[in-house]
Length: 345
Image (cartoon, rainbow, N blue to C red):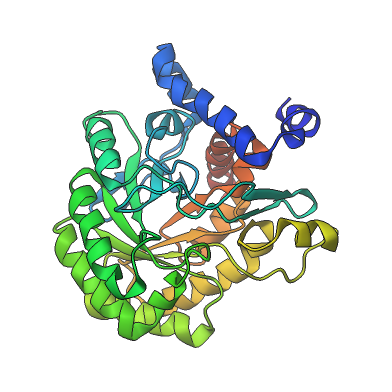
């Protein structure tokens, strides 16, 4: 049904408009009064829970940052079967993001190019909204992803991140420092160790007891990945998220004219799977077993999730395949994990 709807309706709409229409439905789910029924239908039947970050995740599969930028749909996404929802990226200062159009489908590659530019209502607004969400007893684990405000100079990035962390850590189950989006000028330069180390130390102090992770780019060299993994251990951070979107366009099957028309931005989806898996394995080879490593990039099926877990991921996230698989995607993943567990795979 969803494949038909996507092929004949949603794929004809502007991608950002289609996202907002679907998101409005997801936001409305808790108000239907059918929450308990929907939840029983979407969550795993077997025990797929994961204990990490001092938290219990009902399923290892969650939705990555970018889908719910302002934390408006956390409860609805939980009802759909996601064990955790990472909201954001949220910036200290509200910002509209980049000019539209800024989201493009590469259907032949089951991929998306985005240059959204951290469009969000700011940390103050998000704090008030997430305070209410955090009080709900039956909800997914809530991660909050923070980034640099576009109007803030890179030299002043630490204070900007600290402001967001101070506001949002109290309402987050875990906090993520995003230094890897390609859509904010200068942001990826913060992955350089001489800038990253003091930034993470300052945010960690501001986050208090809230677990702190850092999200890195797939376009780092293997040596850079290794050094950041070592830094995470050295600073005593709680985890790493690998990886964000890529600026590479290698290996795509989409018509090159379509790719060129999409322009600059981060590529996500199936083409990212191989590199994301390589980065995961490199990180896991360096960090201790108890450190949380969240794998994201090119995840589509329950088999993909199981492969990431077997490669050392503590948790797995997805986003782009949601656009192609539809609202029952997390349910399919959860029931697929049940099936794989029963068959011993």
